[in-house]
Length: 263
Image 1 (cartoon, rainbow, N blue to C red):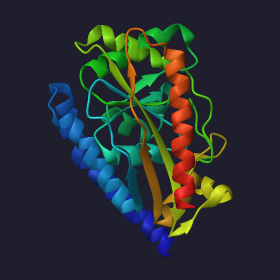
Image 2 (image 1 turned 135 degrees about the vertical axis):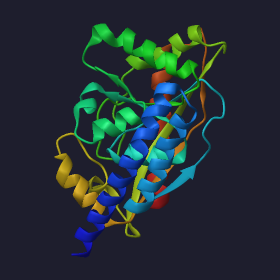
Image 3 (image 1 turned 90 degrees about the horizontal axis):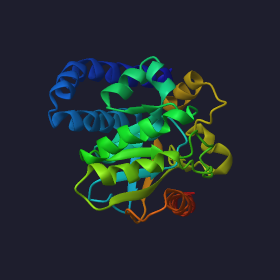
Image 4 (image 1 turned 180 degrees about the vertical axis):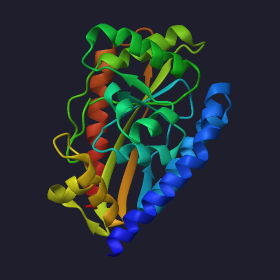
């Protein structure tokens, strides 16, 4: 009964907050107000609070721009956790735009949607991301291309690292910062999740969303760590595949350290 009340309370707060901020965010996006970057950040701060997600930050986000943040990906909640830390925009697969509720939230977050399997459109997608980078948006790339079980990092896809190359052409800056970041889910209700229970927080692609979402919210107390690595300087002479491999290795190390420290 308590778990149901908790889920109902979280749903009520998030729906009420979304309906309240939606019109203001729509106007801010249309008119290019700075508020368009701050409102999604506020939404994530409140969402983490009411959902009982405690976020611990290790390291520091890079202050420079353009900034491409490269993160592992294990759940829909990664958006909420990362979005609480700082104002961010995300790169998501195109089908997310059509999802009920999540699609609306993604659009209000100013997400860039990409068709990952449409190789002929990779250049256009990278160009759109590059434009946003040049405009000063910190963009988050989930480079695995899918969700993992939270215990490991899947191989990174390299195509959208080309956005960093394109941003060099569109920006007065002579370099782009590529910062590896690891999101780790470590505890539930104060107890270590461990390797076999981490899927409580993680959402692998073969698990239905609705039951997982309800199970996550029923817990009421999830600890997550966001670990920032050292930024990688991407210049005109950089190789995107080499930067992708370097980023992947860094995220693997960051995730391993975060999980060992909390389990």
